[in-house]
Image 1 (spheres, rainbow, N blue to C red):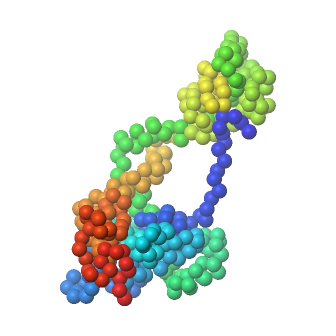
Image 2: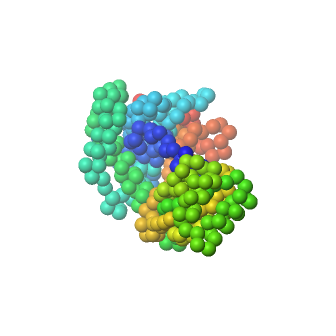
Image 3: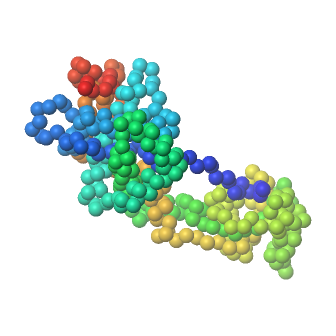
Amino acid sequence: MSRVGLPRPAAAEPVHWPIVNPRTVRLVALPVIGVALLAACSTGPSPAATAGETDITDEQVEQQAKLFTFLAALNQQQCGGPAADGDSQEAICNRFTLSNLIQNVFVTDYAGSNDISVKASEVDDIIANLDDQLSADTVDEELGKLDLTRADLQTLANDVLLFQAVQTAVAEEGLDDEQVRRLYEDEILRFTTIDALHILVDSEAEAQDVYEQVTAPGATRKTFEDLAREVSTDTGSGANGGSLGQAVASTYVPEFGEAAAALEPGEISQPVRSEFGWHVIYLVDKQVTPLEEARAQLAEGEQGAVFSAWMRDQIETQGVEVNPKYGRWDLETLSVVAVNSTDPSASAGPADGAGDGSTPAP
């Protein structure tokens, strides 16, 4: 194995459907199936929450909590995470669910205003992928435990995909050209592929001697390769004339990646120190992804921060009110949190279950 910190082994991949683990899709919500929103003139019970001008009902929370419970069960987890002392799992799941429903109001509005939709084939593919990884029987069994159907699962998949599409669109819209350029320059090693040789030795003096030999008049690439076989302490690459092959520069240890990427093909670096020792680097080839081609990746990397800022702006502009029986809205975490008696932002609520995060009465 080459002693330049490359390649770094890839981590084992979990079940590869982003909606399987609800902790990774904390911003995703689902529209209620067959439940109408309360009319403005309704004299019925208070809504679970109001996001902008949209009411979210207790029935919606109950239905979507089943879906998030289903997702958690697939990973042998609890909906919304483990319960803390004095809190019930049901209350945690309801707060988690309501948080997602609130955010989904603004996501759905944005999708409608910007002609963003999901293809039926994309929904079919994501469900087929889930069936392949967990088995269709396992998926059906978990759905049945909660009186959920394949239609509910299709709705879930559609909304997960729609949410992801809106996240991407918001991130791309929220990053201006100057921000993208700065990100590109800061992360240029991610977009630089290099083909390099190196000679690794233990001391600076040895590295300087190597450098003088491979840069002496008449020295060639073969000179470098022969010396690598003779003196390099990286026996893995040394046996191949110091060749490391092609790799993205950011996957090397920083000192090596930065030094190699700074060279032009055919150039040799001054001695470079890393945790592995002293390197002399010969750059064979370098390919840099242009800014415009890297733009989508850069936006993806910033999606979380840009989207959260956008969501906070929507909520500050349009407002969110949460029924105290579920908790209170926290703008920083973009979630419904429990109301504690010492919470300065706690508001008075119904006597029955108010402020304790309990579930609404049937």
